[in-house]
Image 1 (cartoon, rainbow, N blue to C red):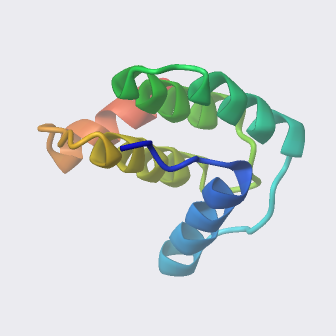
Image 2 (cartoon, rainbow, N blue to C red):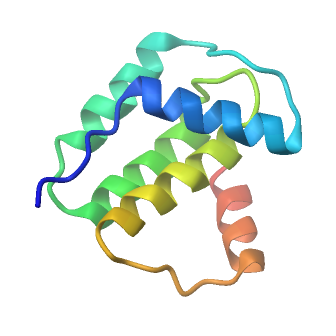
Length: 102
């Protein structure tokens, strides 16, 4: 089964949903950065590598004004879920990982 395509538009919708749920400043800071992240990640066949790229690059490259860490985790989980993979880390461990990346 082919994997669903992750696009800048899909990531923007994920970002918007996270902000609606938890608050923050909406908007894309840099469209080019978001497009670069998607291009880089989607070039990888391994879902763990793709998920890692999304997590790392959205956190570090800040394509959005706000909510980058929340968006990064949600996109990472989406990629893993599509591959049938379930992270075993606790919420505390995820928070620690993402804060360490930031």
